[in-house]
Amino acid sequence: MDPFWHIAFEEAKIGFEEGGIPIGACLAYKDRVLGRGRNRRVQLGSVIKHGELDCLENAGRYAAKIYRKAILYTTLSPCWMCSGAILLYGIKKVVIGENRNFKGPEEILSQNGVEIIHLDDEECTKLLSSFIASNPELWNEDIGKI
Image: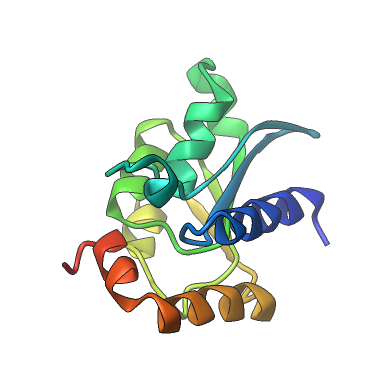
């Protein structure tokens, strides 16, 4: 299995252990990690710290040509906010752990030239589904339903 995918999933597990929403991400360029992050809305009291955004912020500033060749690994289908960041920075490839618990605007990403790879990872799906079952209000807040 891809080591960058493992980093994203590790970030999700760390977030879960911290009492947060278990979604992780890793941004890779060539054979190195540019950034990694996890959903930290609960931990930081943040409205925007989704896993992908935390990862991008932790990566720091890079030229557009780097983002266009980078791959974003995320444990869950990106929401509208995270999809907007993917499009803004010109990331052309996104590896998604699962989209059964939540499916963001993947069609919009695809229509804008983003290659989507679905892993349909069972362990990843179970981690988030168990969190959702135990924390439905927090989950609905995270996806903008409350």
